Image (cartoon, rainbow, N blue to C red; front, side, top):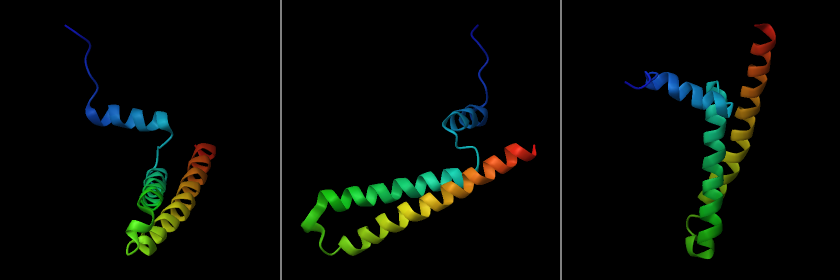
Amino acid sequence: MGEPHAPAGVRRHSQLARLGLTNVCLKAGVLLLLFGVACGGVLFLAGPHASTLQPRLAWGMTGGVISGLVVYVIGRIAQVLRARSG
């Protein structure tokens, strides 16, 4: 009666693998990038109304994007090295 379903952990792993997020550095890099984009979006949408938060949002945007890119690139390099060795 119906097909057997894979456990939730296996389904989640296959969904993340389909996106190319196979190691923790890639996942963390994407999360940091999303955080930076979210801070930039709030900064852009709030404009002058968020004058007290502007410095923090600007630091969050800059730090999130730069650190996200660095961590993501490190994850991709690790993924390529792992694929070549194994």
